[in-house]
Amino acid sequence: MSSIPATIDTLDTGRRSRLDARHDRIFRGVLRFCALLVLAALLGAALSTLWGGREILFGQGLHFLTSTAWNPVEDDYGALAPVFGTLVTSLVAIVLAVPVSFGVAMFLTEIAPNWLRAPASTAVELLAAIPSIIYGMWGLFVFVPFMARIEPALTDTLGRIPLLGKLFQGPPLGLGLLTAGIVLAVMILPFITSVMREVFLTVPTRLKESAYALGSTRWEVLWDIVLPYTRSAVIGGIILGLGRALGETMAVTFVLGNSYNITSSLLMPGTSISSSIANEFNEAVGLHRSALVALGFLLFVVTFIVLLIARLMLRQLARREGR
Image 1 (cartoon, helix red, strand yellow):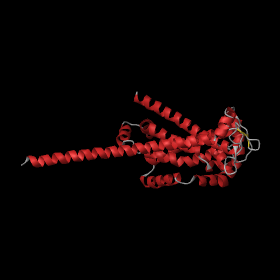
Image 2: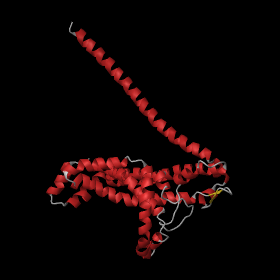
Image 3: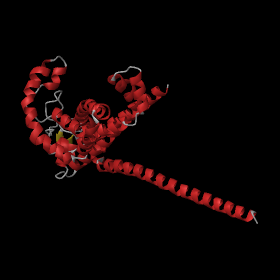
């Protein structure tokens, strides 16, 4: 008689195992479908923009990629100036935002008193959620007049430095590549700071306390313990910020100046891929519309290449850490 309950338990266990295995297969299938759906969406976006810009890409080819001309009257289009503006403004934004984000994140996790950490962290997260058009309006009505007042001082000081001085020469318009880069930096700074802060909080307290016990200063703990422990994740957060800066539209459109010229000065107006599309797409027809859609495809390609390079650098760094 005692073998009957044992047999029932064995049957229940086997039924439960089969049920768990079926649930695992369903869960794995759903996750695979979601992953493939994301890839299909990305591929569809790339192919649709490639198809929409086929007239200019296959008709003008290399001329479209290397020319700085942009003349809708004569249907003469070149993507070099928008690509140049996109890369320069994103580079300025990353150069300015990363050190400040690193410092703010370090302050919030290691230096700030306990009563200040929670309100300041909440404020940073709220700033990261502000729509980009608000940053653009702030840049146009507040920051552009401010830049117009200080650009003569930049030209008189930094503009006299050999080689570097060419970057700070030009009329005090307020609008330009430098202004757009700074506005982008302000926009992505809370985002990168929030990511870095969450990453720094994952560092085990014992590691830091051990370093302090051995006589390390706060700077040594930050530089030799916290940063090496979180280096890969920090670079990942910077990559995400760079991706947002590359594709930003409204914050750049308000303050960039929208000039299809390539210049060595950061004080001169320029254009970007996203701002060109935003400004002209409603009125574009024919080859003009095809050129703008082709710019969208180039933005996809440029963003993919930049992020791919960053990922390769991250992988190389991970390999070096593994050694």
